[in-house]
Image 1: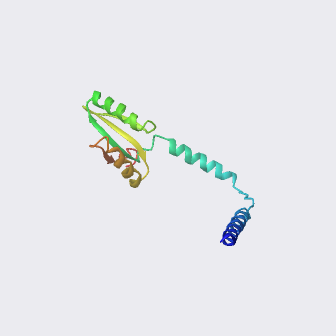
Image 2 (image 1 turned 60 degrees about the horizontal axis):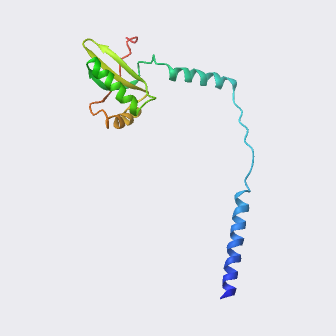
Length: 133
């Protein structure tokens, strides 16, 4: 039985040594060549993403009512989502609080599921761009 244990130990050691040597066998270098125009395009895209002037994006309305309620909604929302974009608007006799800046319906619907946990009356909207006619 001692010979069987020695054989098993030797076989295990040999298989571990071979697997370690094969795992280090693939080494190389990768060179990435990029156009200088790519940096300019990335900068433009970054500026477009940061811009808050794009009123053609989806938003989520979390509150509509008086000023005090709007302030409370904003404070409550910032506790859960401190880095999100919050917009408070005054529509005649009514304050509205919109959050987010979503590019497509899939993004806004995913966020809406999370937001509805705290703001049950929240809903998706897509403001009309007033510059387009």
